[in-house]
Image (tube, rainbow, N blue to C red; front, side, top):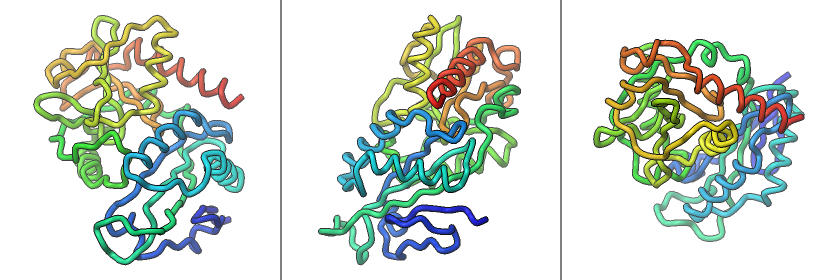
Amino acid sequence: MSRVVYVNGKYLPEEEAKISIFDRGFVFGDGIYEVVPVIRGRLADRDYFLQRLASSLDKLGIAWPCSGTDYQKVLERLVARNSLEEGIVYTQVTRGASDRQFTFPANTPSTMAAFTQIMPLIENPAAANGITVVTTAEIRWLRRDIKSLNLLAQVLAKQYAADHDAGEAWMIEDGLVTEGASSTAYIVKDGKVITRPLSNRILPGIRRRRLLELAEDEGIACEEKPFSLDEALAADEAFISSATTILHPVISIDGNRIGDGKPGPVSCRLRQSYVRHMLEEVG
């Protein structure tokens, strides 16, 4: 059976789905996206994703395609129609379709599209074994707090990582780690989790937000401050978080072993806590 996708109010087989060639997401990257984990056939971290979606739409002045409640129902129906047990739902909203012009078109309804994707989130070998990271220059625009469709810099970083058999790329700006190409970056030193504070230089990661909450519950100290590549190389542990990884330990950076080269105790404890939280949330 063909995968069912959603486009502007219609549930369609993926081969029948169409979006206008004049859509501003296609022409300008004028839109935003979200990725929501699905565990046991249910959405996880649903409240936080709606908050970030609303923030990105507001910052770009893009109208909601429907109410937040209806938006969530679309995702739930997609999950059900595709019998998705574990994976993600990807959604994007653009400013809509109009003749090409840089300024915002008047009275143009926004475009909404969504699809599901099967993906191992809980039993993922990378979570047990850890991943390697390479570093690359930070070349993205300065409004990284908006989850926009403009991902070419991340595509290049991801390809660089793939070319070097690495699981992720960490981007470096002024000697400091900003974040991963599609993840939040963390280090652990003397039992304390360190991650960069929120600003327009990084995305406000939903997994980041939840992990900091869980760390507090677990009695794990956290500090939000910038850290350098040298600090990362000298760290006891490192890890990443995202919708598609939840949390993956980092065992080496640019070929340099982190700690003992194995997933560390703080990373493993936090991942276990997050998985437990998601399973409780979805029932």
